[in-house]
Length: 237
Image (cartoon, rainbow, N blue to C red; front, side, top):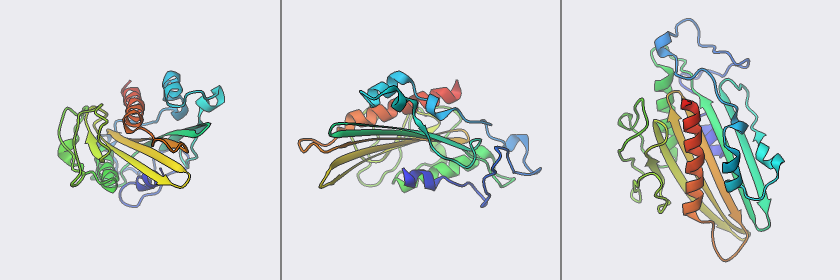
């Protein structure tokens, strides 16, 4: 999660985030350059309670309320985390919303967000091009995740290769990673998508100390996709 958060922490031209929730972009910005979204949702209320119950079964109401992630400017970035340990298994969900603002007069907020998202995907080994993005949900097209890359339809969770996804936001990608050590196995699925000038990152992880089986890839990816679809619909709603 630290990699994902750090990779999109700033946008274009080395500008710094303002601290009072206002945009410090100066008079050179035009209405055409401003992004579609001027605010962000309340992150801990963005995921439905029934979805949280599926991802974090057996947790108490306090856990389902979530823990807001600390940010310097809630007008630009918000996030929330849920974590539940049950016997040998621990499950964690986090969501992160970033509203991108361009500090270059000739670059719109949406275009800057597109650049930032391409860089974010590249760090996961997925190539996102301008042709992959448009002003509506993706209908098709392939990303390029390297030699092991495949591009299944949304909902096909049989591959763990990092890949572009269709059907979530304007453009999206998924990265599924399994790590093992002496204490057990941990699977973490990162799903990021962009809607206009907002980049959303969902991270769902399952850790287990049980020796008989690693956390299932299909169900972990499916849960992350379910959350991402909800958040994308919420932005458009």
